[in-house]
Image (tube, helix red, strand yellow):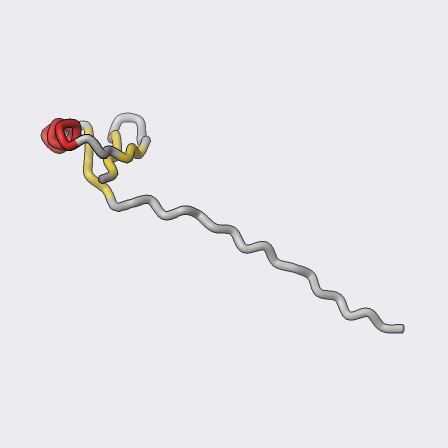
Length: 51
């Protein structure tokens, strides 16, 4: 489960059940969806070779 620290903007993955309950009760933390890995697709320049 992922939590956002509202003061710092950092996202944390939490797996400890006790800590999850504490963070859910804390107003400085908000449960958020899993952050998606940013993938970059490089464009390749394909040049035709003429002879």
